[in-house]
Image (cartoon, rainbow, N blue to C red; front, side, top):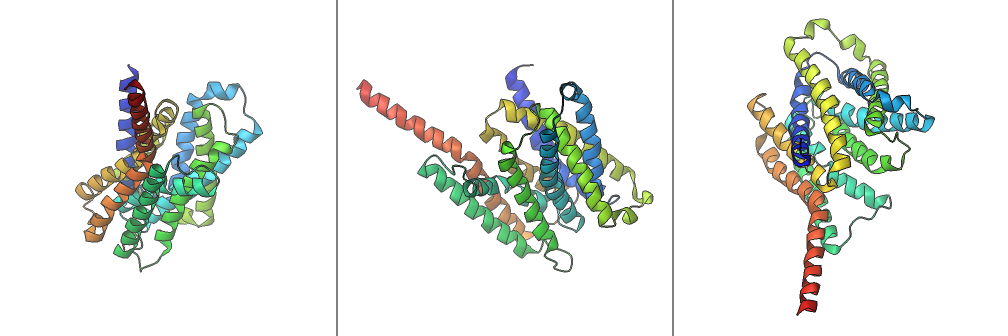
Length: 318
């Protein structure tokens, strides 16, 4: 298999699979409460990845690797996946949840700037990122105003948790590079999943979710959706994403953030019959444009720099 074909397959997997997990969550939540669903899903996926990465584990696991796995698991699995799953369980449409999560690159840029990371390499890149963040906030305001983020009794909790989860994922994505994770990508991913799974199960049990689980609700659709989340959403999706992080341009990898909502919008509307309303349809292009601006800003900067260099060389040649 050629490198180009591998890249295409990995990108397609992350685009389609992660975009479809929001709809799968909608059906799996019929049978399982949110945090227990997240915990059991990632526990199984973490064990599968640990078996695949057993060679790396045999070479040794240090205490800092475990601590980094638990920290990543708390932010990514419990606060990230957990709050998104909870929000969908409270009635937030899968497509709307995907749109809010799609803002993650904008939050990453903002968090990076406040944590001391260089915000941009040029004024053009900075302008694109600022414009993207502003547009993203505008889209979020439209979504909140639509009532789709807090559909049950106008409670602000689903909206607050959904935004919190997105911030937590962005925070971990920025700060986790400074944590002493296992050097092998799959091993580090499995530790994150296992650490987050245990914490999510503890949260679920603490919230009394065990008493809300009924085996009679385990329909064929719910079981298939859960299996899809484990195999495709976690094992295959995360593995493809990990490979992309090591072998592809970060700007290209980041495009999943605005392709996933498109996939979720299409599947949620066609398969689940979700009615989005005019505010959501107006917010969708704003958010997609916002993420495109933030993710594409470094690319724009490189093009501008390359053009300037070409001009200088052209003048010298003349």
